[in-house]
Length: 326
Ligand code: ACO
Image 1: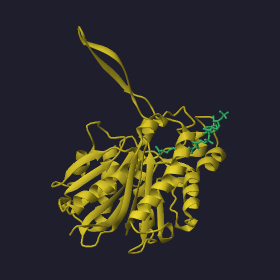
Image 2: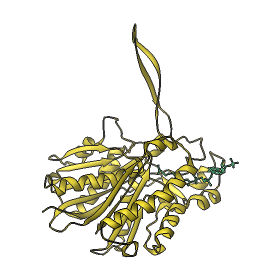
Image 3: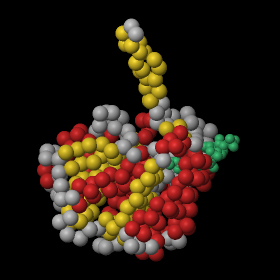
Image 4: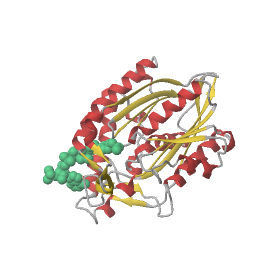
């Protein structure tokens, strides 16, 4: 068994929605501005007692249930997140919450590309025959890292978690992928640590500080996304021996409806094949792709052997695409 098959999906159900109208009470904005520029109408905010590990585990539990895989059979958990509960990593917490006692677990950070990067990483272990049962989770609680006084960014983000189970298979469902990074554009999107000199003992200076909330150059990120995402999808499709016409479901990172429309138009993918849930969820970073995928899967829309083209893009900058059969 040296192929990869996706056998389940899941997502956490958050219940506390924050509408555009509610946001307009704290910053100078309006539902009309946000909806027309981004397609977002509301986003979910994790409850105080909900940790990143909790919502990630909830998504993982659902995906395992769909795949009918007991947690003890999971051998690897990759948690894509930029907002762990603990900078040392949250994947081991998720492992414990799930009771996945035999799994090795680690975090993978690639911002909004994190899910695609994790999916491709997981596939390598499966293809090498190292593991047979892998859980890939994308989860972020960006509301805890957002500057709620900055109307240019606070309107965009929401909290969420989604997951897929990937298993070894005799037929390889991951047909092609392409991953990219460009650190020269790092300044466009930051959640950075800022520190000041601190004298530890006489003659030895260290640094101590804290994280600054998200900053973004929206125009640059927009330009980057609409040019790079179609390009990376075309490359991954080419590797898969497919063309945009073969796509049954285009599941892009849910950053902005205008980006989705521009990518779909460039690839000539009809809008009914483009999955969009950002009106309801906003931009949930690493969670957005598995969350969107899980919604169409649970709605019974995705049929066996459907071709799914997915692409993530975000801070780093990072971007990547994966083409797989359901
Ligand atoms: N409400 C009202 N006015 C606003 C708001 C707001 N929420 N935000 C900005 N404005 C104002 C600005 O102040 C500016 O006013 P000014 O001309 O008087 O200075 C005007 O609107 C235009 O601002 P721009 O930033 O140029 O607005 P733009 O049309 O580019 O839209 C947006 C902003 C929606 C953020 C757009 O640039 C975008 O979608 N970029 C992509 C961002 C993105 O997708 N980021 C996430 C991807 S990566 C990841 O997921 C982490």
